Length: 263
Ligand SMILES: Nc1ncnc2c1ncn2[C@@H]1O[C@H](COP(=O)(O)OP(=O)(O)O)[C@@H](O)[C@H]1O
Ligand SMILES: [Mg+2]
Image 1 (cartoon, helix red, strand yellow):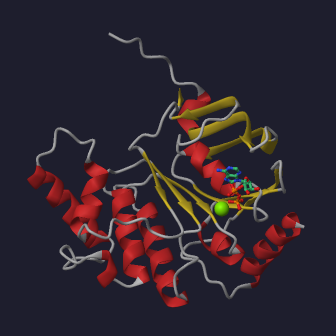
Image 2 (cartoon, protein in one colour):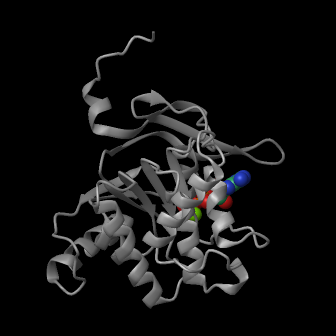
Image 3 (cartoon, protein in one colour):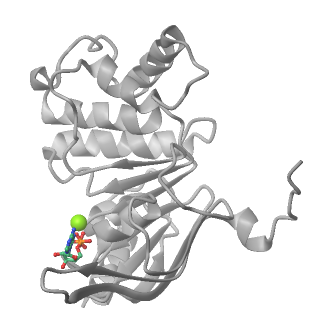
């Protein structure tokens, strides 16, 4: 049997830790594009972490490192206290534009995320998919194809697909920026509600956005990054009740704080 180590303080509190990571892209001709140089940050259990930073500073790269899709050149990534070596169904990712397979139905697109769940029968998988389609408001659209759906509905399919494997950590890269404002408002509220319901996945969320109001509305903590190689320019803790109204003075004081750090 494997020995179970006493959980350290960090293991109990942080679902994900990046410790002194450095990362460069190798360019054609051999030069390196330095994106991170000894960056450390952590995501706590049950936390909604927002990330802001100038365009091109490395936010999407950071999410890919958090997902295990890219490996840092130096430093460590710990997921639930253990080194993250490769992508895991416990961490899922949602992008700006949903990458759906046009020749698969809504049901089949979501079911693809259960490919690793070998112990479930097809029928059990279908049932699980239906539960999550219901949660994201797509009941009745199981047999539709992506081309038949609006942008907001496609992003809901992507959300169901990101959640159906019941991940502990959801990573979102500008998830609302391609949606019309009204659809964005309702989807933001739904993701917040899901995250607040601790009996449903995910436990923690990391969201990258260039929409500072959106970050202040949803985040417990906002990490503001500098331009490349990205360092932490500052961390803003948002201490406001949810759901948050964008009308209060307090709200705009937080928004100003983030803009000030962005410089
Ligand atoms: N696959 C890649 N190969 C080389 N350079 C890349 C690659 N992906 C991103 N970059 C560069 O790395 C930097 C950080 O990119 P990215 O993480 O996408 O930034 P952000 O999401 O903050 O806009 C940018 O200068 C970008 O041009
Ligand atoms: Mg990006």
